[in-house]
Length: 225
Length: 395
Image (cartoon, rainbow over all chains, first blue to last red; front, side, top):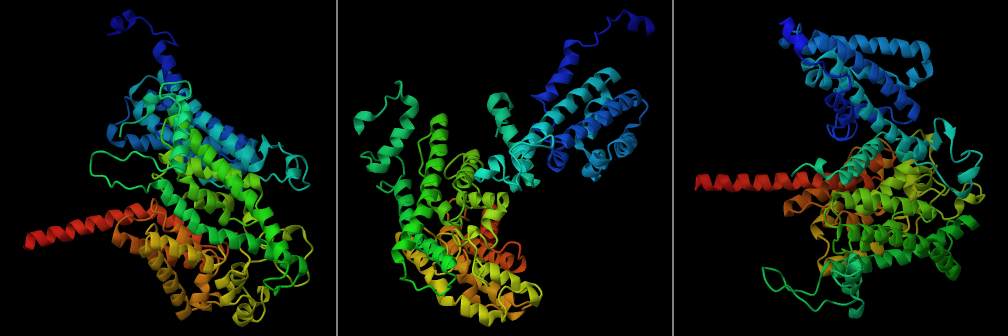
């Protein structure tokens, strides 16, 4: 056994296959716009870019660590109780993230409120555990986590960009169009922030627009009727 | 005009849909379908749409006058300003406010529609002829023009083009625009500053409020001290009588106020057979039924309002005649139309009375029923199949 393993050529860390693990989920296999997972958080926390970034970071930690742990344990986990084991791993990691956020970023933690805890139920994470980490080695699993988090994060940032700029008139908290109460800048000419964009349903429109743009660019993504 | 026709493979081939659109709009095409089971008739979508626009003209004309009327009412502080006083001034002010909204709505909407048709190489379908007229009629006269433009783009793209253009939309395009404005810019679409044109910038006379009758009614659900009109429903009916609503001399969105103008339009639509009388009648019956139900078990003063007065207020009649009957978004089956109308009317009154935050429930009710229409049709068809299967088995 050990002889065979030594003979097999070692796969380079960033082989073509491994690179695809990272790049595919960003565009052509995007977890949000193609697999339509993790939509709930895309609706809830995309009011500002800051929140979107923190959320992405949290998901990265949970998914990255989780994928590695599950991948290392994959041969030990009895398949009948694998979901429970996976849940325990996610829950533990999410609690760590939640506590860290509360300790070091109390403002943001308060805004994200329950949604950090709800990372547990983020379908992307359980999906990657089930679909990838249970059947692959730790390193590819980690790359898979990187790719999926990036794909998730890009959509989150795009949606929150739309919502923060047109909904709140801000970018990273900076007032883009002037002061709306003192009526300076654009507000002087009757511009108003769109309240609909702040409301959660608009995130659905935003995600839909991204899906539309993506499929218009790459026709191969359009499903058959 | 033939000589301007672009060659199908020429330099301007991309613009052929535009040419075709204008050509068939101006002239009845000489060609008819040669084969297949088609009705060979001169009437096409454009004539149908044009008939609806024609039916909307009374509402538009009255809306123009009404806009001017309430502007001067707010300025003079006299609710009982006679109809003929300053008639010319009112008309000019109304035209100045309303016509730009109509122009912006048409330019933007047709622009988007043409752009999509050229890109997809579709023939231009003048579905927007009606929407472009409906949008100005269901907004307050004070709405900024850029908001109309943004809402129109949103409605045409998200409400219609993404579903495949004219005839494929799930929800009413004009109501989508209104919903966008309502949720996007609530300060410009509700409250008591926008319904009397120009009143937002005026210092109003003491005790004068720019609220619509519905806005004032909504206060009847709260504690007595907060009532906009002290003295309850009698005082309300004295201020906004049933006949005021019938003629349309109440503040509101541009085209929705006058029941008489709406009925004129309805007569034309029914005479030409364009709109479904089943939907119109059942929508009104549904509204009346819900209002009578509230009358029978009133929990607050609002619910005691006379049912006929209730349905004459706000956009209920306008919605019943012009919005709910939209043949694309309404239910298609005959039984489905009754269900669709009854529920729509009932929901409209329900939302309006029970949730004072939405003084106008008609928009919500119709949009909701638009979404439900395919399901209603599905069950109507399924039950029909079941019924006939049963008959087959017993026979």
